[in-house]
Length: 176
Ligand SMILES: [Cu+2]
Image (cartoon, rainbow, N blue to C red):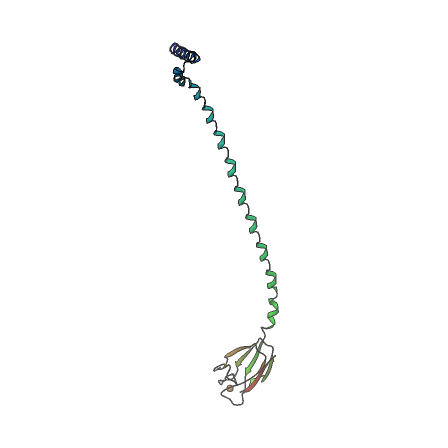
């Protein structure tokens, strides 16, 4: 192998030498033989060393941008619950006033209450009574012994009412 290669190289060298020698002789007709000496052209291999160009990976490191989660920490704003602490004031409205239907009469006959109060009528007689507004705006319906009717008055004013079975059973509620 070595011998053949050596011989081949020697032959090539001779050919080149001869070619150069002939060319140097000034023979224009023999110039076309020179292309055989273009072997050096194969030395463009170094051009393939552009691999380092693939080192642009670091550009993908823009993940940290997703760290804007802390913005959702505005929940503390809902801590305005203490405002609900003033309902106790409304407990003054839960006033109840009792009126008995006793002895064919409303007892007491005249009552004054604050707006929002509730009146409770209870029939203490053995006979049937009713408690209904003179203007027919409300009516207890029949109340037998022991039965009750309740109504809350939210609007200030005078309310006259009566029992539809006994002409003398009349009374008044004043709402302030
Ligand atoms: Cu009555």
